[in-house]
Length: 402
Image (cartoon, rainbow, N blue to C red; front, side, top):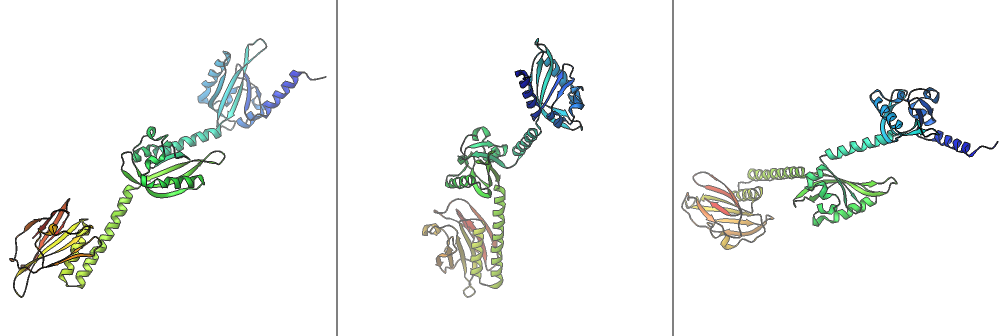
């Protein structure tokens, strides 16, 4: 006897149902299981013999029983439920996330007599979604600016730290070129970065400078990694930028402190090894000018000539900027008995010598230095024995003599 077309169709459908990776279950309007395919056994842990004839509620957690009431009410009305994400319970008591589609089953007269359920295990998808949410939370809470861009340098994502570091909101940054953060003289860096990313290479802890929305500069440590699609092709890059402005400042301070300590050691060594007054005074003047970051320094002191008993005012000068001393700029100073002028490299630029007797213990005189000196000044003074007095001044504007 030849099988009818309906028989062939039924067998085909039965094979499809049994070979499906999704659990396919049918039940009546009381929720009693009528059919249970092989995938349902694998997903829920019950065999068909154990499940058929039992209530579908055996796989519904206690806190979700109301879901079945809602499903049955919808089915009795002839409505379907599509892709309803929920949780069900296996035979061993563990829980499994599923995506549920429920459709009414009609008899020949069109009356609803039951329901078919298709349950898809979405454990992997749920885990992936959770991982993405966790990653998104980490990115948003990071103190580092985290940015993604395509291979043209167009910004695709911009976290809260990027807003704080660079001053642009996500709305302002996304869709713009990453080059808006790069100073004009450093634009070539982006070409190098993109070339490495296209080659699948990573850039680790590259220290550079970027520009904020307000135009100020920020020191950053940059790590750039390629982003790949599901086929492993590089489609963009992720950037992690750490603000190292404070670290850079502290490093510079440490270097400056070490340099200052070394210079002070040089003065100590000079004083200990030589009793040359002029050499010691010149060294102190040079060092004080450098340590205070002044452009000009002068050390004034009085000495008494043992032979004649006359008093002389002497001073030593130090310059740390590359301009030429003009006669009118120093004309207001008392001319020293001898002294030297140094340039920014420490080389002697000029020497002046003069012996002019002065009244012992001369009173303090304020001398004005005209252009090219300008800006601020700082001074320190001290006095010695009856035979000499001194004053040390660092200046870019006014200079005090005593």
